[in-house]
Image 1 (cartoon, one colour):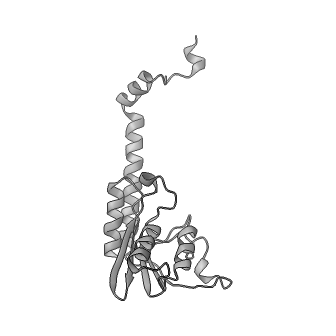
Image 2 (cartoon, rainbow, N blue to C red):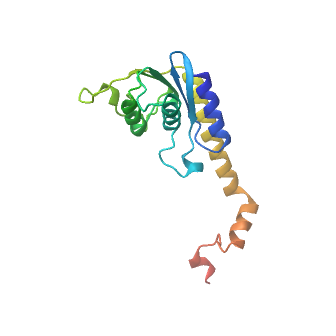
Image 3 (cartoon, rainbow, N blue to C red):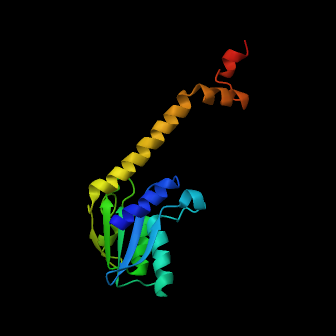
Length: 173
């Protein structure tokens, strides 16, 4: 999970939501990935997807039955689907995701008996560190947005761009 956190920090440095993932096979790191949907203009470029793609290439097979996936945030439905298709045997995540988590927080795809693959899921590993990096990222984003709103230079730049801060009904008098 430490390596997944390093990947999450790499995502954060690129302005992406800090999520990192690592695929391990027979005790060896096979692939890593981090979030990059914004920079890559790719809605599927989640950390898990990046790591699964790299692992499949490294191992020469889209099936990864002897592999484990470590990820700093509980996988979403898209990633859980890819994990199932890859036949990952175990998923280990740090922070639960109460908005989009597909390992029990919102839905639990790995417990759905009608699906044909069921990875073992372990949550809460290094939870505090995984939650902490996400909280730091979003706190910094909120602070930066607030600073832009309150900055006199931002207001002057908006007016120079033709965006008056005075509503049309008040400026037309």
